[in-house]
Image 1 (tube, rainbow over the protein chains, first blue to last red):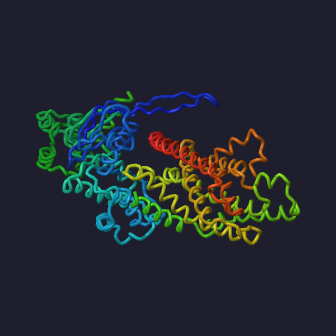
Image 2 (cartoon, helix red, strand yellow):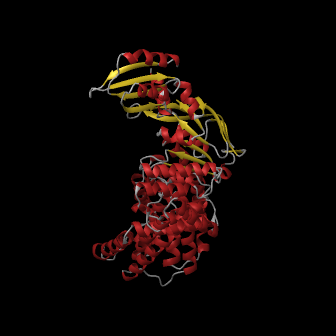
Image 3 (cartoon, rainbow over the protein chains, first blue to last red):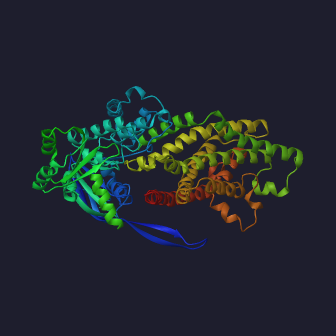
Length: 328
Length: 268
C-alpha cells in the first residue's frame, strides 16, 4: 500500500530584483496532503494548474523529497529506502520525454531494464512481451526519432513497465494522443490495475478519462486536498440536477399544464426556448432522470420529437465550479 | 554495477554512431593535429630551432617538439574526457531523459564509469592518431618507458574523470555547458604546461596550475616518454595527482547528487 501522510513540499526559488539583487521566495506546492492507494486501485489526482499534482507524483515516485511528512510504499520510507522503493515504482509522463531518440525501441527498453539490474534472459523476455503488449513489436528495431507521437507514448508505457512495478504513476499519459490510441491506452491502464493488481495514480486534464478509469478521485487545490471520493459521488455532491433538452416542432398551450404537473411532481423546473429553425427546446432540470415520462407524454399528444439530449453533470463541471469558487 | 557500466557503454556507442558522422571524430583529431603543426612551424620557421636557455632547465629536456606534441595529445585527451563525462547528466536533462534515469535505482558509479569507458575507447584512438602524426613532425619516442607511460595514462584518466564530476555539477548548477567547459579548457591549456613550462608563468597564476590534474599528469608523462624516466622519480607528482583526484571525486560526488535534486526541483 502507498501511504502519503501529512506531506508538504515547499520550493525555494530565487527571485531577481535587479542586476545584483535577488531574494528567496517560498512556494508551497503541496500542503499537508494525506491519502492511501491500495493494490489494484486507480486514484486520480485532479486540480487546476499549479495544484500540486505533478509534485505529488514526483514525491511518490522518489524524484523529489517531501519538505515534511512521510510517504511509505509497502512499508518502506521513500527517503530512507529510496533504492528499494525505486525498484517497485515507475512513472509514465505524457509527451515525448524519457526516451533516447537515437536508440531503437528495443535498445531503449534494454537500457532502462539494465538500470534496474534485470538479468539478460529476463530482460529479453520482458522486452518481447512489453513490445507486443503496446503493439510495437514489428517496429522494435527502428530508432525512436522516426516514431510518431503515439508510438513514442506507447514505448513510454513499455518503459514504465520494464521493472514490472507494483506502483505506477501516470502524469498526463494521453496528452496529445489520437482518440483511438488514447482509448487503447485507457483500456490497457484499466487492465494493469484490475487484472495485474498494480496501484496506479493518474493525473489528467481529460476528465472523461478520469471518470472512466478512477476508482477514487482526489481534488487538490493550491496543494491541499479539498475532496476525496468516487467520481460519481463527487458529481452528485456538487450537482443535484440532470438537464433534459427535447427539441420539438411545436408545443400547444394545452400541454403546458400537464407538463407542469408532471415536472412539479418530480421537484423539477422547466422552460421553453424557441430556436432559430422555428422549433422549440423544452428544457427540464430535475434531480430524477425524467426522459421516459416526458417522452411518453409528448408521444401521447402526437408531438414530433426532433432531438433529445440528456446531460448529466461531469467531473469537469465539478472542477470548473471549484475553480470558479476559488477565483471568486 | 557492471550491468549499468555495460549498458551505458553500449548506449553511448550506438547513440554516437547514429548521431555523429565521421566528421565529428575527425574534428577532435584535427584539434590535436593543428597543435602539432603549429608547434612544428613556429619552432622550425619562426624560432629557427633555437630555444630559450631556460627551457631545458624548466622542462628537463631540450626536445621542444616532443614536449609540445605530447602536451597537445594529452590535452586533447583530457578535454574529450572532461567534456563528455561532465556533460552526461546535463545532456540527459536537456534531452528529457534525466527523470527516467533518476527514477530508477541505477548505480551512479556504474553510469559514470560506463560513460568514461566509452569515452576512453574513442579518445584513445584519437590520442594514438595524434601521437602517430606527431612522429612525422619530430616526436621522439626512442627512450620511452612504456609501462610508466601506461600507468600515468591510467592515473590521468582517473583524475580527469574525477575533475569531470566536479565540472558536471557546475554545469548542472548553471545549466550551461559552453561557458563552463570552455572557460576551464582555456585556463587548463594556459596554466598546465601544454605548450610551455609552468615555470614561465608569473607567480600569482601558478596556484591555478596546482589545482589542474593535467599539470602533474603532463609533467610525469613527458618525463617517462621523452626521457624514459622511472615513475619512482616522480612520487611527489603521483601524490599530487592522487590528492587532486580524490578531492575532485569527493566534492564532485556530493555536489552532483545535490545538483540532480536541485534541477528536478527547479523543473517542477
